[in-house]
Structures are given as structure tokens and as C-alpha cells.
Image 1: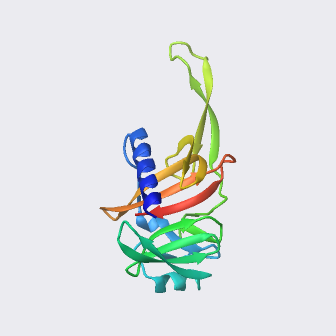
Image 2: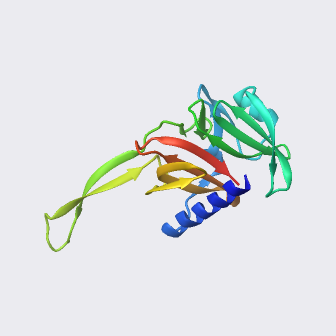
Length: 194
């Protein structure tokens, strides 16, 4: 987890240096929900009891030592998805299959396999020469800012990503949401990290 945290921190710093200002989203837009029920969700900081209420019994529960926190975390596994708890509070998740949705309870959600939108627009080459244009490809996913370019994080090769810092109301948190897209422009990994 320490290596993963360092890699993610470096990646996050690179993305922030590319964008002029950090993308912020409210923590309520990063809730975990069953794909079949988006009326109840699990938010950062909530308990394992709430996790089971929202997602049901996990396939397994294991212990994992966190060098960063110098403490033992509980890892709840649901299919290919993992949710980490420290001191009975959800601190992170990694979603790798479409059995869990992420988003706002009773609102906009997304899941593994959702496509990024690719749009080709005509852009003027020189405003002094009307009619001369070039094609420019624009990428979007809901209202998340996208960074296009191949890379690897935690052993996962991506073609595009979006990283957003999480806030709780007006208060910034240490959490961030990371969305990774493959060469087919599909979302293949959703991570919430502290």
C-alpha cells in the first residue's frame, strides 16, 4: 500500500502540474453502490457495518498492514473490487468490475466499462484566414476533466485518466478519486485513495 500511495502521489502531482487548477468534487459524488440499487451508498469515512448494509457480505475479509499509518487495515473483497477500512472507517477503494457503481446516491453514477466520449471538432488554424481549420479530438467523461496520454499506475497501463481531489462540503479532504481508461476508451479502474 505504501508503494501504491507513493506512485499515486507522484501521478497526482504530475496531473496537477498539467492542469492549471485542481479538479474538486464533493465526496457525496464518490459513493459506492450496488449496480442494482443506487438508492443507498457507502461514503468515505463510513463503517464496515454500513458497507455490508449497502453491498452485502463480502467474499472475503483480510488484514493488510499499512506502513503509512503503522496500523492494520481490513480489506473487504467483492469480486475484483476491494474496499479498505482503518479504525472502522472506509479510507479507500479500488473498483475493477461493474458489480459496484460509483457516484451520487439517487443521482448520476458510473461503472467499469462506461465509455469516454470522443468528439472531433473543427478548430480554426488562423483567425485571419477564415475557412482554414484542422481536426482536434476532444475527450470527455461526464463532467470530469480528462488527461490524455499513456502511462502506468500500480501496474495498470492507461490511455487516459482523470484525477479529482475530494471535498466534503467546503472542506478539502486528503482523498482523491482516480479514473483510468484503456485504449478502447472504456473506464477500467476507479480508485478512491487517501
